[in-house]
Image (tube, rainbow, N blue to C red):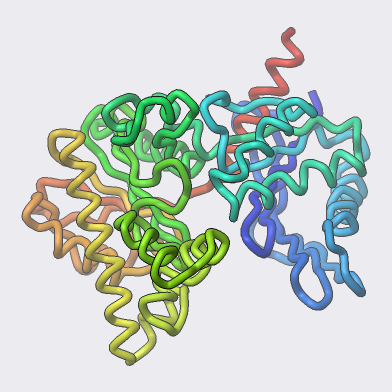
Length: 396
């Protein structure tokens, strides 16, 4: 079997990637990097596992499809690790719809089905799929594998998965799917390692970042989550609104005369922390600001997160563990503390010193709910899936 897999994690303006050695049972990170196509001079940055600089290159002029940058990545891998070392490229695909419950090799037919799901994730799906075509044009012989953010929640069932709309729409796939599954899968696995006694109990993982959602776990499986049909639902996010009264959307269209496209742009790009604060979508900027509107945005973020933890606890019938992850969850002691204060009634008490130091375990000695800070690693989850698919192909 080839010795490595490249995994791509596409964001709104850049693509994180990792190259993993898969010759052993557990993937090992060889290097990681960033593809940024939206600077004046698109650039590629590659770093070693410890963050040391390995390679950087900028391209002059525009590179609309990113093809030159992807060619540079593949050339770097071949030059440094060998021409035949790369076995596959894995892609984080945000929406798998009702048909895809696990990783799958990307064929033209699969690609077409995933492209049809774009209306369910208009901000994310095109960004995830674009590199598939680009790499396919550069290296048509290279295996590409889709890893889905929805797959971890594929077992959600009514009433959790159901909207209270005419059943004919549910039969057409209008249901709650959930997202951030690659992150939740990694964190659930890590939690089972560090707190095996908690694994079968009632746990909520809070993936808090520019995109944010919660997942209720029982026996390591998703039984509820805050995102729904699309990544708009649930918590307040960087620029996304989260749960909103549908009447607001009708009002915006009927009385403010916003078009469907205008409403979509407002909900995905102008709302959330940015919309409430009028300052920034970045929690770090808001925490450093003295403006009242910044504090109001943070308060709403914390209020909604704590409120939805209570919703997840209702699904679980109680709460035994809470895990913080994601950019905000891992790095903002202020947000963790504020959420904890709102959940004291559930038995959660956060140890101030442990929280300030971002230790892995942050609950106080008298807390009946165990609390953790666990760094997520979506790229590792994808590497594991890709390695398993390659082994499965070799065994057939």
